[in-house]
Length: 318
Image 1 (tube, helix red, strand yellow):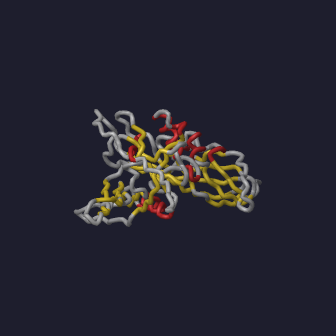
Image 2 (cartoon, rainbow, N blue to C red; image 1 turned 180 degrees about the horizontal axis):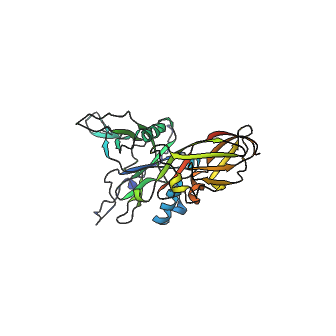
Image 3 (tube, one colour; image 1 turned 60 degrees about the vertical axis):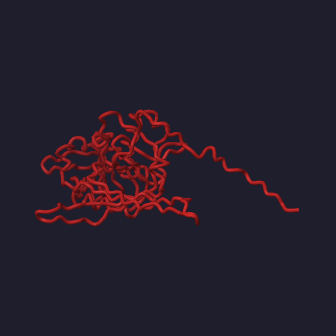
């Protein structure tokens, strides 16, 4: 007697979607910016209760440390959809039986913000755990999970610069963004709607790199600071705010221990700050972007600052 195999039927009744025409609806218009994230970053459910709460979470994330930091890229100058056409599989009788969709691919043109800015964009080429939140004219889009909203898995690579021609096209900086899931923008897209007349680029910024310069002395280190890209001296705007021991960090080079900065005073003549320290060799930096923002050095809306580290040798005070 032949064996009988009992196979559960596929629930075909669920393979449809209602298509009544709505009076209005959220639509994909065009990419106006995007937010790059790392690892398991997501906006938690507790921060998705209303738009202001969501915005505050995203603003804080741009100043966070480590993999919790997000990178907002605003003001896309152009976007070409270069997604390959889907492959249609046919039966022996010529009927369409399967559609093999390809990953979304976009060639994006950025505002020309200079050589250093483009260098920083190219650093993302090395990351393999990236996700992206899509910013459209009406919404921020991503993947809904049971615990929140996260970006779509992606790759992002800034391309070689296309140098301009005198009297012709200007220099162009472009990059390639690929969403790994072919159905990301069709079946998986969930949205956070913007309020009417809202412009995200006016409410979120990024972090500016800061270079430090200075020397050690007898019981002190004298430090100056300027932004790397625009070479703007921070003393003009933050001379008093950076004259605070909480705005600086000193690490003992030999042990990695955090050293005590006893005082910070302004040096108006040289537009620097004088840090009081015991004798030793130190690695000096500004505090973290979030710590600086708490001192109103930078902000959640305008963006913040992150400095490099410099080595100074402090001798004993007389």
